[in-house]
Image (cartoon, rainbow, N blue to C red; front, side, top):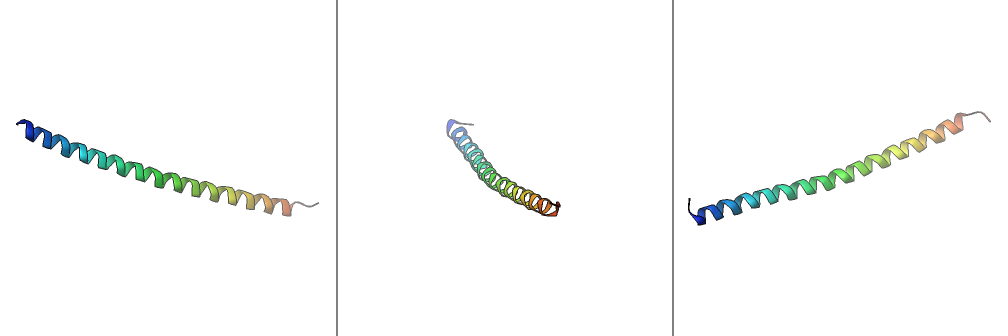
Length: 59
């Protein structure tokens, strides 16, 4: 393998690796948004349950 072939293989491998890293970062951002949405849903459900329980408790 000569120097040009080595450089070409190196660049190709680096491009592929950086593309994979970019994909992973984008997936992480989507996952963080989804976790936030789920957290908001859980908080809303908890508040609904608290209101329901409060309204069911006799005064």
